[in-house]
Image: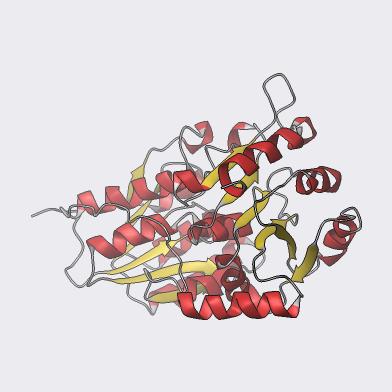
Length: 348
């Protein structure tokens, strides 16, 4: 008998309780787990602000909210109370933290798997060496490796990752939403919609507003386009400043005030999404939108490590050239980037 197998009626917890982009990069792993174990109960542990998207994830049956209380011990105690009541058979921790490690150990979840990194690994009875600090492959592949390791331990053949999109809304409803959006903002129906998102969570450097303005002015399409400057709560002043630099460029400010799911619904109808390496980029990619993104060259933040999960032919990535500082996005030639974006996505 395989000592690593959990019982047949598996209740599995997957933990990815850090930022929005990190959670979206867990969707291929969740999809493989769901396809490989169609009868299992799969729960995800996420922070409150990513929970609305977790609730509509087709690969999860239940969403648990990390209370994120101040202090590892305090948060761990709250998590133990939450997890004990759920009687999970296994936990797959995609991102290792001390408080969650302590909680799953104290909750006595029988099978506990995490990356073999950081002090938190002592709380797990199964570990996988990944060396993520080397950033040798995309984050979503590191997540997949953990799920595939778990499935091998169960003597279960892992399903192949599905093709994108991983997130999708009803096409007819999105078509109506696109039409309503254009009418509300007096955008001609024939114009392509290019979303540009300059907001940033701060985990990686971003282009300056001046660079974004220069990039936008360099975009060209057959038949014309309209630029949508998207923003989340608190980001409106930044997009207003950018808008003031776009003289002669048709543009609209779209400030999302109705939550992540409604924001994602708007992204599904965009013809192109442009941003830095940030959470909304990975939401757009999960929808299999065309994306153009700007990354530092720092090892922990590269375009390879944070590669998006849309189809390869639907993504472009730009970074500072060799010889410039790793974090110097000012060294990126945005005029050349605009030419490449036009060639790949807009002039067809």
